[in-house]
Image 1 (cartoon, rainbow, N blue to C red):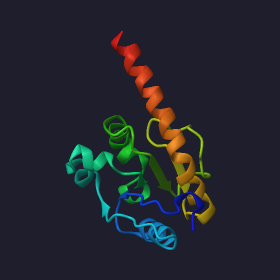
Image 2: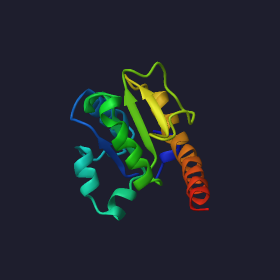
Image 3: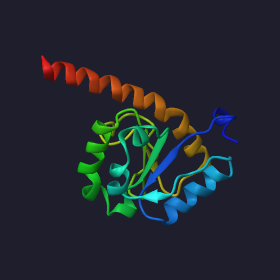
Image 4: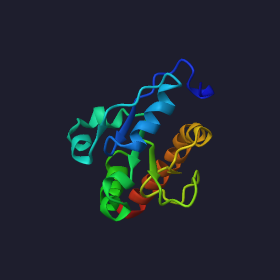
Length: 148
């Protein structure tokens, strides 16, 4: 079991199709007793109440299943601004490597190269909240300087 998830019920969402990324992720999480919400698209996610959408502890986004980064870039930046407290983990075959840094902060907190490795997923779940807190701080600073 993921050591930092013992006795914790996490709400984990998935934006993308029912495909190999969803199946793989559901298997890895399920093997640790963690449920993955049903796959949905951006429209369904955006139709949730703000409280329900913002209550996700993590949100995975299947970049490949949604047609590639150019098809979802605007939606990801909107998602980050609309729900800044939700840690976003991106999944794609196109990433050269897993990225646990903040290099794609405007669109997500963590980037995982597919196929997802168990150790990468565990570290992503550990690191995403820290990166997300940094995103929130940066967004607050930006909004304050923009308002001034």
